[in-house]
Length: 156
Image 1: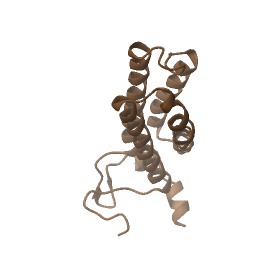
Image 2: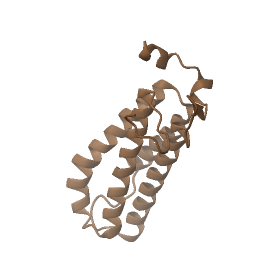
Image 3: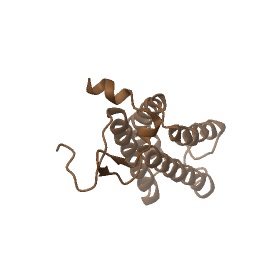
Image 4: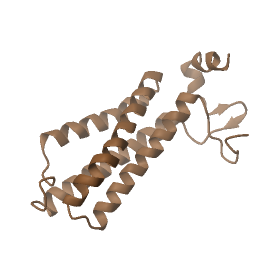
């Protein structure tokens, strides 16, 4: 019954700031939009920095068409999540989980050491993955129909 009620919400219900007499700080689709926008802006800025300042250090320090496509998809996903539709939440969840897997099992153990990392390299890697984890958490909250309310413990 609860699942049926959760799935039958109208778009007006999803957009309300007040739900069950509790005020939420912001809506999840706005939060995830800004988190993904920040994540991909940080990552793109870092790649441009590596291409300009660290060209030739490794074979991974050249901006190429595959990276351009990656960032177009990433920024597109940030915009798409603003549609606030259930299918976009599932897509954003799967996309961010995939990026976390690639970052954890390919980028950090293979690409990062080849770049002879310094402080900016480590900062970008940790911030990028951390922001993606926050986006995953918010996607899960939205798909569960949960709402975080300031000053209230989630289990109460």
